[in-house]
Image (tube, rainbow, N blue to C red):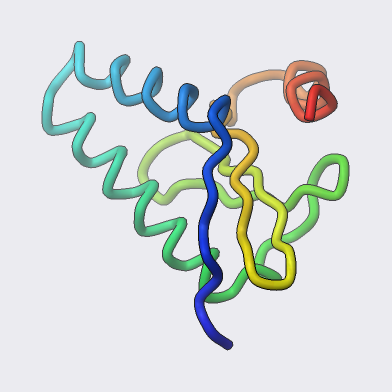
Length: 102
């Protein structure tokens, strides 16, 4: 299967930057590692979008390898749309509300 084109919605991008900023305050290396972890996950999702299970509101999600963040996405015929980057420790109520706003 060909790799899908990736589009990161603005709210998801903001969430990713906020997470990177949080880790940046602890260590520059942690922030860089988070972004690399995100890139690796996006690469995997774009190659195999159906590999990950449906979680909320018909969005699929993948947990980053080294950080407690879930990438919520939807795959269309030729495009992968990242709709949220949410800390996995957030409540289900928060996650449902965040994804419902889509």
